[in-house]
Image (cartoon, rainbow, N blue to C red; front, side):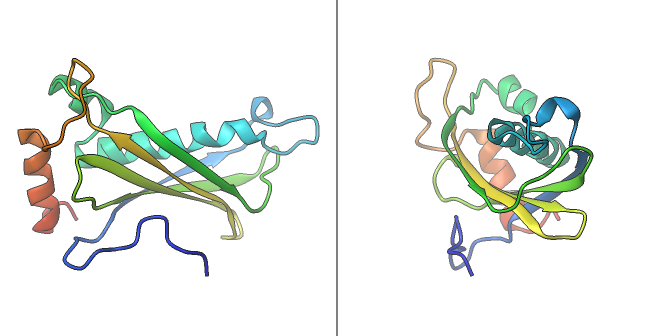
Length: 153
């Protein structure tokens, strides 16, 4: 068992989850017909965007509140290759954080359910002057309250 990217803290609400189904396209593979390693952040993004849209925390939701969310960290752990034409799923998992940031974990599985790739990203929340927000802005504080209360499930 691998060490969790974001260990669950006592009192934290369960993570928020969303899954996207995809098929590997020809443009995504290298000459060996396996997905080129540089494509995986884009797969993560597909699921991160869907998760944000599902829970009202998408990029446009943030932008309309004057909040930017740049990537601070990105990690990819390659386990099995994906091949041209192969169906796979991308699960995005948003983990609770006491800090004003977004901790996403990603799990890619092939059609057999095997984990092919996993990873995570950390996004900071910043204001329009690109200053890191130390306290959650009101809309994000409200989101966190609803998450903590179980109203997002």
